Image 1 (cartoon, chains in turn green, brown):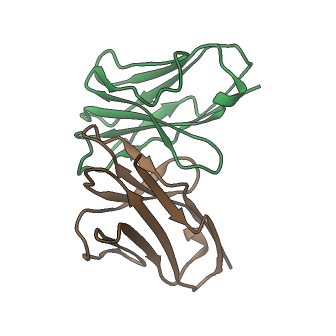
Image 2 (cartoon, rainbow over the protein chains, first blue to last red):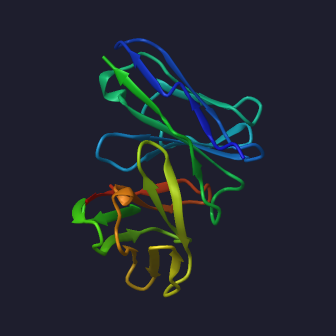
Length: 115
Length: 111
């Protein structure tokens, strides 16, 4: 079946611009996670959705980052006034529950480059 | 503060060698430990471990958890060039299931 998909696969933008990254989770998965992975590091948690609501946004680095999941399926991560330090691979994962015992399935990621 | 630490950070071996990757953790209310393989961008799931001392095996890969000493190992026998990847260890850190990852071990298998 279809896995987690993310678009675009690559995004190059200029410092100060606004970007949106999209995640399409596995159908029926209620839990959705965003992570950010910098070069040479493991992924770092950003935000978790259970259904439509952001149940945990403690990983968002600052108020330039925001994410929505209005219908409980597709999610969009939004970054305002991008900075060079935002350059990273943004990964989305979904799970059939809160992943306490269920593995998270990852998408291919969006590589964001801020010039 | 919860943390996951992997070692070594990188490893170069030749085809046919056996490798052991290490993962230690300090996680409040520990539930499970997961191993992922990351070749390009998407980490792909390998194992989930919840019980101490029970080996999980998939082909040439196997993994075991020690909840007393707070670590896990991932073994790969008879390595192949296709095993070259970053291997990530992670644990859910709260009721939300958000994962905390180690830095990863970059494995390069030379022909």
